[in-house]
Image 1 (cartoon, one colour):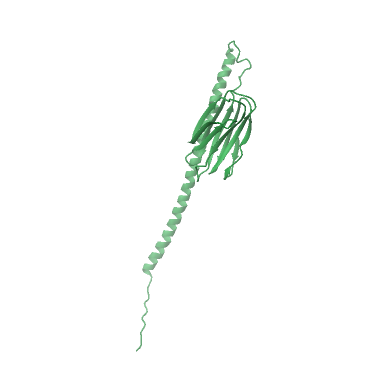
Image 2: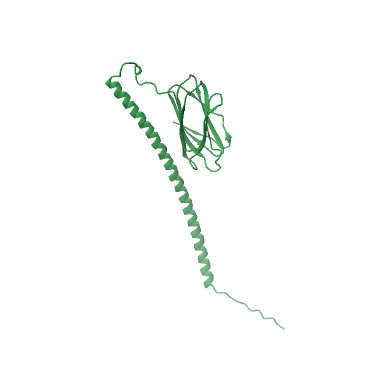
Length: 215
């Protein structure tokens, strides 16, 4: 996996990824406030299946704006303030497909987004898998195990994202509790000092002086 961190202020040029057939690009992107982060996938050959999905892991209400454009600039997918979503489509032509995440609507919290971009279907497990004759029992078992392992990988990715989201919430709550405890300690200290001085003033002797004015 690739970790990318972008700085605050405006937007950056899209980062180009060379996407080959049956390729899967995964990444975590940290998007500060008032910023748009774009990536592009350059297709060198025409494919019939492209899959794109994302999920916001940390930040605010866990939502982000997303947009996907084809090489001609036509918007294929556009959603506002989504926490997670997936989108599959057929590439009409080769070229550069651009997808952008926007956090421009947020003014306080930055977002961390996980996404993957799949190009093409998975290649056959065996070179002769698409033949007319039936697969052998060993080949069928291998294909079943392969499909089951792909499902396991999907579940592992899902639970890892949920774990990262829960960890982020716990750390944020821990930070807030720590600050609140420090504030309470300071307030108690100030109140205690104030009470000491107040009680001291009750028991202190007040000396009064009289002045005689002679005639």
